[in-house]
Length: 441
Ligand code: CA
Image 1 (cartoon, rainbow, N blue to C red):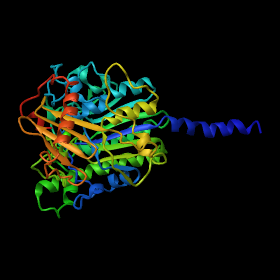
Image 2 (cartoon, rainbow, N blue to C red):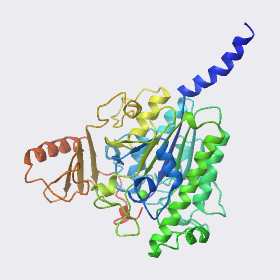
Image 3 (cartoon, rainbow, N blue to C red):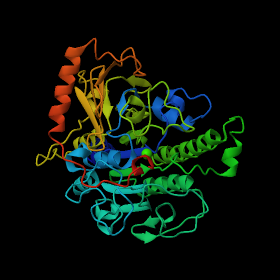
């Protein structure tokens, strides 16, 4: 028997180790409409790989991001903190020599903490958290990097030059341009990262810039959508379809390398679809740039086969803030106590072990106070600068059409007080971005 025991141990121990140290894959899309994914009901834009991902896990039907546009959402994702706590409330201007335009260097990012805990880390795609050398992802905790530093990029056939949407891609700080469609390349890079790291736990942040403008699908992909009459929506649909295929390639690599059951996957969009444009946020009100649901409530999936339920909806509000706290919990890293953090470890909630709502309240603020919002239970209060607060009951009015502020003044008073208390914890924006820039990304 003695000779068998080491064999049994060798077979069992790696599995136990893998279970306790899961990989974490965060997939972000950019400016994708709430309704423009198969698992939220899209009829004209098929997304079979994203739909399969949703079926393998939980569709979070009240999944939120912390801001209705690009960079601030990413700042909270990387820090687990409401980004207004450190003044990251606008999109930074692309200025490689201006250290004020970017995620403040005083913030410690999730990949830094995971690196310290033994995780291999990778970033692929769009950065948009500052363009100076000190702000680069390889200086902020990511060991393996491939993508572009600005807030958007051409997808195909660009001539590299020193303009935000035409800069060279970078691999670990060195120029690295590619001939193929950017979205396809990001899928190839993600699969390669997964293939390189089959033993140690890893964290991969895969941030697509699709389907953000410019809409530049390949001609072959565009041809598949000839049935869509609106030429802009046709291109947008093809861009989403290319991203869906790249996500499929990424998930297939998890399967092929035997890592699917020990990988927690998040998918969500960085903000609502921009309006008016080719996208749809139906049945939500508003879109990118706004604190109505259409700006901040996004397609949102959490998948971890064998650990989390599969093929179900999770209705209570969850937030992009929760990626940080969930990841640290899985890595066995205590939440920092030097500054406030705002996310929660979602795993006990998603497993059904904790049946409370993960977030009693969620908050939003844009433009240093141009717009505010709070969600508590099914109440949603929106307060635009110099206008009376609006109140909606999302349980029966997901489209925020019927303002109940005058009939429920006690609810308004309560929510305004909560919003004002949260506001007192924040600082003004530390960089303003360009006027109008907020809607450009
Ligand atoms: Ca965006």
